Image 1: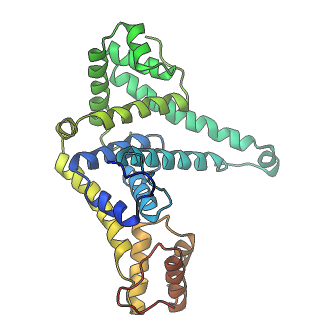
Image 2: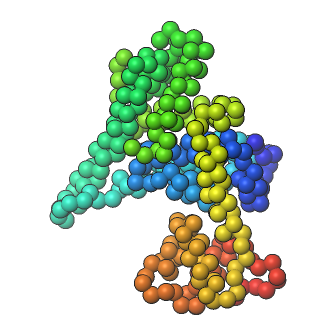
Length: 183
Length: 122
């Protein structure tokens, strides 16, 4: 659903749209929040989604007139999760430190590996889940190197149908394996 | 199969691709794939409804009701306003004038709606 060109959606329209979402769209929102909350494990998916809804209702995130509402909400959730990630990265590391280290900025560097560990752990879990699925692993490998779906299909010898089927397995596998977005 | 280089951007691309796929998948398939469809959908709907409801309520008149209403607003919208959070962060309950000041500020920002009765907030 996209608004007509030339005007931002009014707040009442946002409320109407949110209140009128179908069950399928509500489940999509849940999946988006669950996926992104895996990258910010200190946040529950409900909190991430709640913040996204709040910002949209407040007008702090504006729904562009030509953008599909679900695509807009997906981007909003992603953006908020990234914001929390960056904020966490800026916090000083726990434990003892002295003024010199603070000035040095070394403590900031310490939080980078934490973020990388979260990403690494999640990627490990995904690979373990699909360890016996060569087509899925080919897709994951291609996505890691920013290949397009066509390039992945060409490289791995998959047809478009096989590719779509493997994507479905990724989606369903993650939904079953990580239902609440947590570890 | 070679494992991809582990970076945040790699994971972002993978998750983005899954999100795109979720957007493209038909409603019927989305509903079929979720084991507890109704419960999960209701959970999300309740979350959205709470946000809409608390925002749309007229500001109460009575001081105690106003204080309780602000407390509930903070509960469902924790990141809404640093002033609101600060008002309820100390052990001592906020005074009537502190509550009024926060409400006035939120009205001015357009976060809250004015009463439909025509009585204006000062």
